[in-house]
Structure formats: structure tokens, C-alpha cells
Image (cartoon, rainbow, N blue to C red; front, top):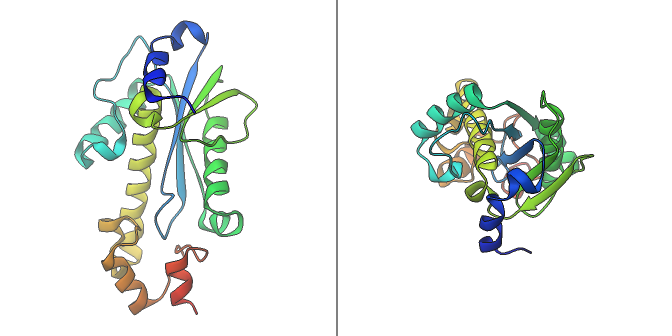
Length: 205
């Protein structure tokens, strides 16, 4: 595995080391007990830079929302895709995440010459790709993808909360908080809960 130091040095070389367009890919929603896992792919425009890109988890919700709109406006192209709860339960969360990433890359209007993916696993792609641990903090295009995926999923949770307000999805976004677990025990599972996740499976016994 390459060191973070080497990865940071590599960033500056990407524009000439890998000719052509480079897409960054990241996901949101692997850990929650409900809802789809969402992935985004982004090809940034070097001539139209975006200031303040960072790992989405390090940004406030308001900052993420503002950057989301700026990324959609300034990127050369971007794509958001997901894998459903049914796919998560049938494939497992890792394979469903890879599927969402693959769909996001394939949904890009422009075909990149290389794909940089956050983490240590790669989806099955026909394009040259590289996994970068901590890439959402190291590579601007991956940072942008992490923001798109996070905001998209958070918005989905807020909308789904309107249908099932008793679970508090708008607040905890489906993660296994004490509030969420208590609601699961009281109300049981809703259609968007991941049956293959242990806390959900326990209330279904």
C-alpha cells in the first residue's frame, strides 16, 4: 500500500502522468442500517477550480450543500448512482457499494482515461483505475464525489423521513444510534431497513 506522503506527491503529477480526463469516485451510506448505498463520480474542470473541496465528513452540512451546487455547476461532468436495499441484502454491502460505484462511472457523460477511487477496493471497470486510501482528503475529484454522494443520500433520508417519521431518519441518516435502535425495537423494521444487518435482523426474529 502506498504511503499518504507518496500519494500527496503523486497528486501534482496526475495532469501529465496520466494524460486525459481523470474521474474521482466515492460512496456514502455503507454503515447505516437503512436505505441505498450511494456513489458519485466526478470529472473536475482544471480551468474552473472549486475552492474548499475536502472529505465530506469534515465539512458542515451547510458547506456540503453549497459545494454540491458548485460542483454540479462547474465540473466537466458528474454522475450519481446507487444500489438498493434489496441489492445490499442479496449481494452484501461491499459488493453493492462496488456496484453503485460502477454505475456512477458508467453514468458519466464523458469517458475518463483513469478512475481514482477512495478506499482499498476497486469496482470492476474497463477503465484504468486506482484505489487510494484516504483519497477523499487527498484528491480533489474524490473529495467532490464524496460531497455529491453524501448530500444526495442525506436528502434521500430527509425525504424518506416524511414517510416514516417515527424512526428519526432526518437526524441520524440511518446510522445505528441509540435513538434509531430504540425506534427499531418499538416499531420494527420498515421497507428500507437492511435485513442483512445484525441490528435489523435481531428485531425480525
